[in-house]
Image (cartoon, rainbow, N blue to C red; front, side, top):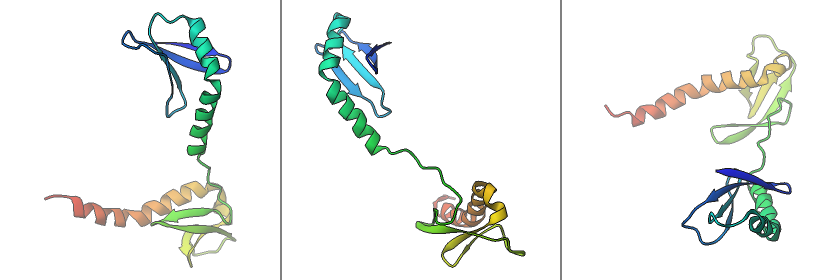
Length: 145
C-alpha cells in the first residue's frame, strides 16, 4: 500500500479491482484512507480529495472532539482521584510524624508536602495496598474449583 499527500492531508491508498468508485475513510485513529479502482489516475484522486476537503476536515474535527486528550494528573490540592467509584479531592498537608505520606482521611486524600514530588508513586503504592484485598475477594468468587 502506498501513501500520498494532497496539501496537508496524507492518505493511504488502497487499490482494489473489485471497487468501482473512490471512497474516503477517516479511521478511528485519524488515519485517512483513499480506496479506489487501480485504473484511477492520481489527478482524479486529487480532484476528488479537493472536492471533499470540507467533509474530511469536519470528520477529523469530530473525531478530535469525541476523543479529548487525556489530562495528566497534578498532585496539588483540589485535584480529584477516584477510589471505588467515587472521586476524592487531594489535600496537600504539611509533614506530620507517625502518619503515612498518603492517606484517605475524612473523604479527602491527604498527601504530605515532602512526598508531593513522588505523588504518582505514592498513589500507586496506596492503591495497591488498599485494592489488593478487594480484588482478591472478588476474584475468589470467579475461581471455579
